[in-house]
Length: 489
Figure 1 (cartoon, rainbow, N blue to C red):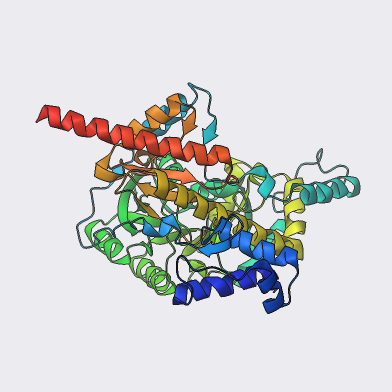
Figure 2: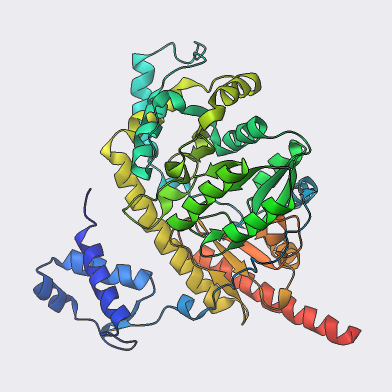
């Protein structure tokens, strides 16, 4: 495994000194010449070191004086509170999310969007387009009939082989023929749910959760019971156990263990292991959405929930949509003891995926370039998240809270005084700024005063200006809400 570049290693050294208190806010870093002499580095490496720390908010440059330690604004903003896990679950319900999402989509089409904070994916320039194009053109020369020949129903492509091989890093032992290619992770989830549950059955989901999952459940006629989910440690296993005792028809649990959407939480290994055992004990299928684990800010791969599965009770779903090629819509599923049923459902629903993109992505994943790309992607996203969090801390109203996750593409922001996110959404959209309101991420009203903000685009002056204006809109809306309350009183 390659080491981080030298400037990154040195930045970590100085960040450790700041964390230990050896360097305090206001202290001056060594000059560029001193850094060159102390560490035996070039001027460009010394500049990269200082600019990296400046970009992350840890130092500021002062004209003709050098770089000085500062405390990033994001560290002053309050973190989110933990949800209560010892209360009875809300009644399971048909989720009714289609109307909310349809309204959201229709309204965002009403005006021109200048700045889009509503997405959960990276900018096109963050992905290795040229490398993928080169592989694809070579494959077209080698297999000229690939576009005019139907893909075999059980084709063993490099994508399936690469997914199985990388599964070893996450603690899973999968054969390539246990991996089935899908049209993104959303099809994998759809197949998994159809394999283990029927219309009218109940499925336990995180709360809040990705609205696309709620849409799938509604389209399948299934009920959702929302389980309290920590911004830090993910789904509450204790609350899930209460729900399993309260309902006798929960057929599946769906979790995103790493960088949960929208919270960004990461489930500890001990929680994953307890979750596997609990679902096995109750005879409930456990569906793992592992879309985001490669975006964690660590060189050590996160252990998949399925790595503790000994009975085939865990269905593992994953995707390249966020990490490699959003335009390819490639995902996969390893369905455990439901493999045969999922394979038949896939054939019935969409037949086989086309082969060219599978071969292209699979070949790229089998090279060292893939891991180098992931390291660069994680580094860029980390800088963008931190700068976005600093801007939110600087411009949003007092009392705003946010969760700064250890990786990923988005921030989950809590507005103060239960300010309705739809109010902010409406006003921002009129000015060409699009956000994802918290009301989309639950069938309850408990997240109506939250926003999900994308950090996948490079942090430009336009992005900072959009966040500043969004903060002003929140402040103005909050002031208006307070005035209305006073008049009503």
